Length: 248
Image (cartoon, rainbow, N blue to C red; front, side, top):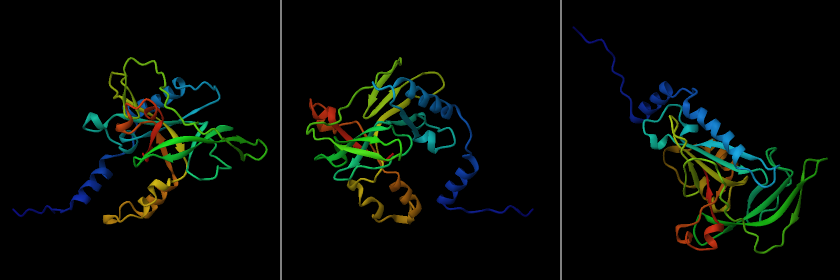
């Protein structure tokens, strides 16, 4: 009997695309629910001295990017970055902003990103104090002239049964059916930093990412996370003040 079945031959990229389109439907999952709970937990626990300061969390990593439960637990962790509404970073020699997204507070400390001798690692130096004008919604900048006002790392206290640090991430292990959560405190930078100027124009194979994706990435700026270069991790002063650019 003749075999009337039609064999469709697909290359690797088509196989992967077909897999994602047919199996990765965006549906609620235990991990996504836990990510939402973890965001609420961050807002409730990681409080600043100033009660008006808000924490702005965002879910990143596999929980945000994948719509299926990962087969490997090591990529099923929940990754959350959060920043304070009262802190902002800007590239060196950049003028202070006169307007900010609504998530920011009426009074904002602006830190200038200062290069260190290690690529990607920086210091944050307090440069301006911004105050929002209630009539116009614009910010007025006051220049800070303190030469040694660098942002220092502070450990956020969290009443969890298991806590450990991996680089900039504070890992929480709640137990049960949900995976651990990596919480990363950062300082938001709304502009693309000059340290990464060549990234949007570098040569790329196969046209990926496309120009629209590149524009979107650049328009989102970056973050500065609190972690020192490995050579500084036992340095009494630098270890507490050095940070790293993050493009998560």
